[in-house]
Length: 339
Length: 214
Image (cartoon, rainbow over all chains, first blue to last red; front, top):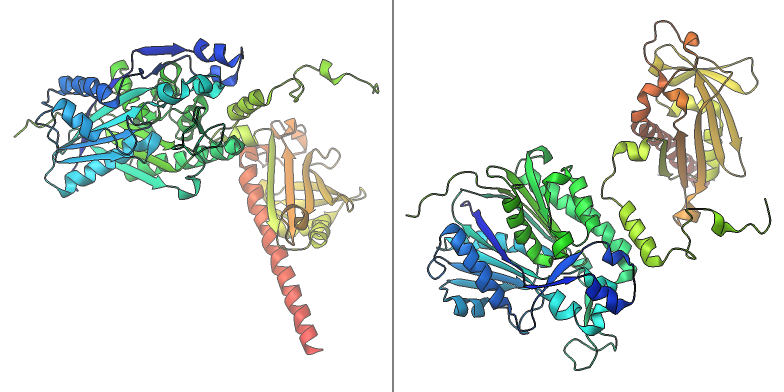
């Protein structure tokens, strides 16, 4: 297999920042466990779209690594929590807005909080089976502003946990910063534990006046915690074994960030010290799939992710339907100059 | 105890009257890790458990008979009676030539079998193996037994209180191995399971054979 590298990441966080009072005031509760996790989060603007977010994030990405988006993107892949329109993801819209000329465009609906890793895996497969030489992958989390900020929903303390953001990455067919292992798994038995619910019980496409929310089947909380504690350490260890490394070789850990407990447990499970874990939970909340690229950029900016080190990625999505992990040998060597 | 004692005056109780379910859930999340250091689980207590496919009465009777320690344990052998009623003495090969005193206190109603033991002397039996047999029908809805086995980290494990009683040539102390008690006891529990399951299966086969002949 041709090596494929994670060349760079960039992000965009919506301008609107919401603090805990936004939810506290509506809920009428002064204290709640959900207010003790995250302090701030961003909410996508009312008229803001995934394409708007992508335009800013991809422009930043292009500036960082000096690429021409109009010529240098062979593959475009996206994953969105709440898309701009039903039926279709934002791929074509991003192509139009930025005048890209990719040969392959895919909007993925699976993978959720670990869709970044699923997209890396798919991009690597396409690069290895076609003449495509690079890929741009984009994660959008939009559910906080679009769903959880709705007047009905912001009364619920759990609405304080998610935050919006966009993380993008550029992958290329070289061995300068190679993906050394990818593990993805699908757990079909847990596929129905996250559902859209409305107080009046209607289907999400049926008309009504009450807001929809995302329900994580609270009665199964303990079971979902158990899944996260079991499944994620398994894939993290599997990816390290595949990459022929141990926890001692890992320079930094980046996972999705559903809550502070999973962040702690996943780190402890692979014996990685706290200072080597990158997350932005306090200021961004649960970024769903956008967490991994956004935190990866944060890790580079803060110096936690250092050139030459092996970076461990991982996590799980929704109520445990997908798990994934990867090892990247970050900036192993200088990029070859373009032919 | 005072009959109408107000339980709410005891500090630190977590009950539905004073802690909301949501807060309780958060505490549970906080306490639930994906992995635990060995010392956190086996530092103060060493509790192990196993299912044995053998009736609880048979398991209890086997455990309650002190001489069977010579079969299922790793290293206690050559049981002899002592002057003290009910106290036996074995040689424990883990200590080379080391006397291991043992008094078995069994309660058939509760199905508990406790071995009160000590190395080198039989006057203060501080090393106590607490074992309970439970009908698997009650807890697993199937025939057989569940065996629970706990040791507590008595301070004497850390410091031999009677060094003068130890054989001169012996260098180690039973408590040096506390960190391996989980592993050692698990191995011995497997011995117990294999012996009891083997004999029970054999007895059933013999019984069926006799029935077939008659």
